[in-house]
Amino acid sequence: MNDVIETDRYLHACKKPFWRQVFAAECDYLRQHLLPEDKILSVGCGPAIIESCLVEHGFSVVGLDVSQEVIACAPDTLRTLVADAEKMPFDAEKFDVVLFIVSLQFIGNYQQALQEAARVLKPSGRVIAMLLNTGSAFFKEKQEQADSYVRHIKHSSTTELEAAGAECFAIQGEYFLGISDEGIFPSHDPMTAALYILLGQKKL
Image (cartoon, rainbow, N blue to C red):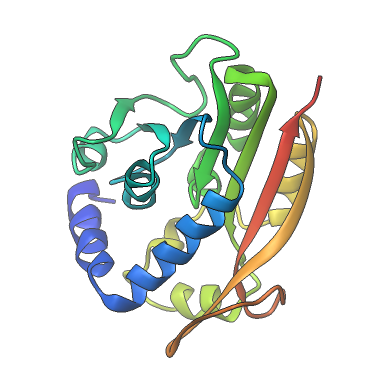
C-alpha cells in the first residue's frame, strides 16, 4: 500500500460532508469518555483528524503512528511520534488514556500493542478502542470496493480482540454509530452499527 496515495485519498474524503458527520460523531463519543485533565495517547493516529478535534476542545493528545509519510499530514497543533505500536517509546505509567481509533485491527501484533498500552497507562488508566464492526452492512459494502481501506484489515474478529484486551483491562464492548448512504444515525444494533467499541480500565 502506498501510504502517500492512501493518505491523500483519505484526506480528500475527509472533506466531504458525510465523513465530517462521521468524524464529528466519533469525536463527540470520545469527549463523553474523557476528562479535561487526561493525558491521551492515540495509537495509529494517521493524519490525526479526530485527534485534532480533541485538541481543539482542549484535550492533551500525543499521536503515534508507524508511517512517517502519514503522520506528516497531521496538524502542527498535535505532538506526534513515529514508532511501532508494539514497542512504544514511552516510560511506564505516563498516560491516562490510550486510544485506538480504528487502528487496532490494522496492527500486526495487536496483543503486544494492547500490552504496551497497559504498560504506558497509569494504574487507573483507560483504553478506548474503536473497532470496525465487520458484521455490519457498512463494512460489507466497503469491503466490496476495490480501493477501500477496509480491505487492508488484518484482524476481523472483534471477539478475539476483546478477549486479548480482557487480559490487561477490565473491559466491556458496545456497538455504536449507524452509517448509511443517507448519513449517520444512532444504533447499537450489531447489524447496522459501523463500530464496536472496547472500553477498558487497566487491571491492578
